[in-house]
Length: 84
Image: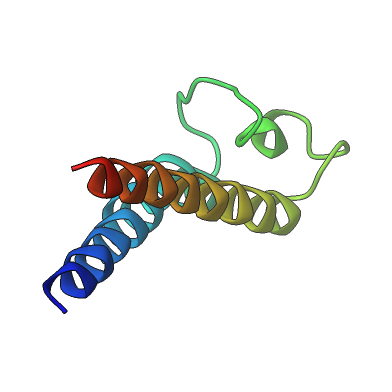
């Protein structure tokens, strides 16, 4: 039963900190504000080349990418818990 709490706490930490907070800070705020002096990467291409991909599409794409990233982090941490 104690390990269940460990897995849930690791899942929530991965989801909130590794996923949500990073996505908001790195992708969502620059995309919503527009302009600015941001480094152009795959998540901010809509700011420079809006004819390639729109901002709402980029928000959805980066949201899914960060969700995938935090789920993979969870799998790695769950594997480390199993090894312990």
